[in-house]
Image 1 (cartoon, rainbow, N blue to C red):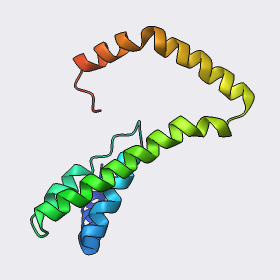
Image 2 (image 1 turned 30 degrees about the vertical axis):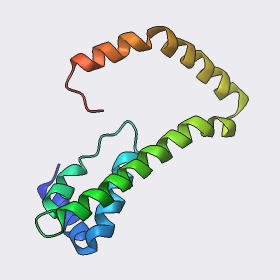
Image 3 (image 1 turned 90 degrees about the vertical axis):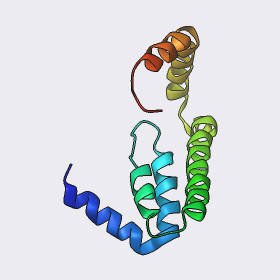
Image 4 (image 1 turned 45 degrees about the vertical axis):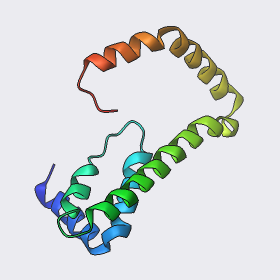
Length: 113
């Protein structure tokens, strides 16, 4: 993308310090299928902030993001209409049948997560 765009984001996060690192970790981990390179700004922020505290806050933020994503996937099904639930059940069966093969194939590729 545009280098100036990333520079602007980094400068904004740098202004927020530890809170910015925490928030970008939450948001970066919350989006399941869109890999966001949030670790790069965290590493760059370690030049001016305490790396230990930064790592702890980024780790907690990442865990909260992943747990929120899991919770939405696990319990969000109750909010779906019946037709959508039926389609999800069919998809679940397909994953149960071919899931191991998909995991194996993705493990062979350099795809993230």
